[in-house]
Amino acid sequence: MKQILAAVDFSETSEAVVKLAEELASASGADVMLLHAAAPNPDFVGFEAGPQHVRDDRAHRLQEERRALRRLSDGLRRRGTEAQGRVVEGATVETVLHEAERLEADMIIVGSHGRGVIARALLGSISRGVLEGATCPVVVVPSPGRGDADSGPGDQGRDPDGIAATRRAGT
Image 1 (cartoon, helix red, strand yellow):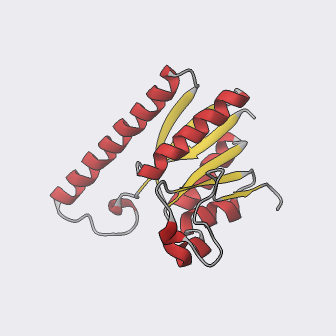
Image 2 (cartoon, one colour):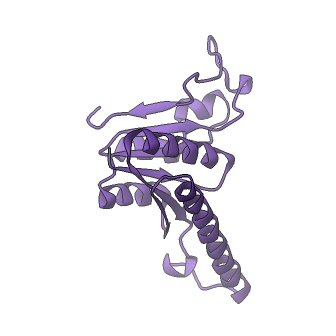
């Protein structure tokens, strides 16, 4: 394995995504690309420009997201994992799949924020979209702290390996 793409959104789940990416990279010698798919700028997706304060807030938020991603990738490098960060504006599923292809990623790691039995059954639109569209293995990391509230009949509510779903290319 040479390249791991880890999608982050700066949630609590992202910490688990980054940790798993680091562990897998350490074991395999792979590089890690941390990817954040930022909400597209409304000015570029057909909406009216809107008030200046809205555009200023959006620009500030993008700067903060870039700084946060830089901190994550710097931390990985300090601990010995070759890592880069990339913020791309766009729809999350399409952005993750495009970047995975562009990088020729050997694996994609995404987080799941599903809550409750119904959300888990649906897996989450982002994770499901990546699972269905990827040409490489995908690991979906469950949200930390998910427990009994997520349990269904006969379900313990936890994944002992910390991986909610995986898919290999071609399956």
